[in-house]
Figure 1 (cartoon, rainbow, N blue to C red):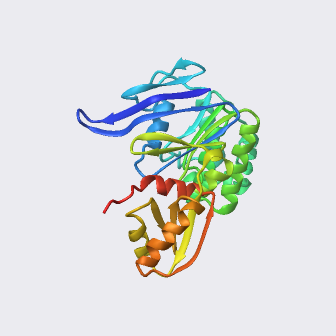
Figure 2: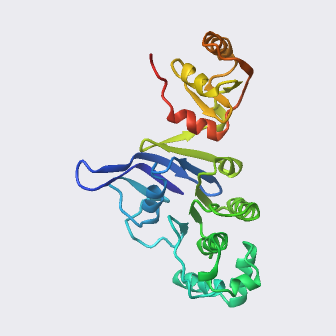
Length: 296
């Protein structure tokens, strides 16, 4: 349904600063694509281009095969990009009705309250002024606003930030249900474990470029617990891609790497408490991708 081709964005005149340099991926009806990356990787910039809020420097965005011009109406899109804005003087229900009206959707007060209740804002909440909402309540309202009208494409930038576990579950469950009903969902988040539980595909942004993470072809990693993980990371980084996570160090490679890992650590006088191999988590894939082996 959506296709991003070699998308790039430079801020300022040449040489300027490249927010993204080559972002390419697709989004089909009925699937959830997770967009992940470090702060400043270009997630919000990418979404802003898709939403038509800013223009691209190069490349193109297509919907159903047609190039999307900047700032052209996107009635098929329900989006929340960057920091959501609110009418603080309105009640939650009136805010939802007003924003729905901008999309040409006429909601009754009862319909607005029902939609807010579905995201955990009960009747008393929906009748309270938005200016008095907590952060989590605003996040729930922003989500309800983005999906009002049941758009064909839902695009959300960090929708679970600031939410409690119940709010996170409500939103993720609703996104899964929308995808099952045929909506295409593009979701960015720093909560990589959450993305991994709902996404059909994962696209990583790093160094201005997109990389698709294929769940079926993930290599194994080795997790080593030792007495000195800080020094272990330094020793192993001279030979392999490695990242330290808490008391563990994680190495790119499975059982075949164990003998060399143990030899390196024992040679440096570092006691190894345990070592095992398994499929990597999304967090491990992400962090290992950002690390380059250090040569002596």
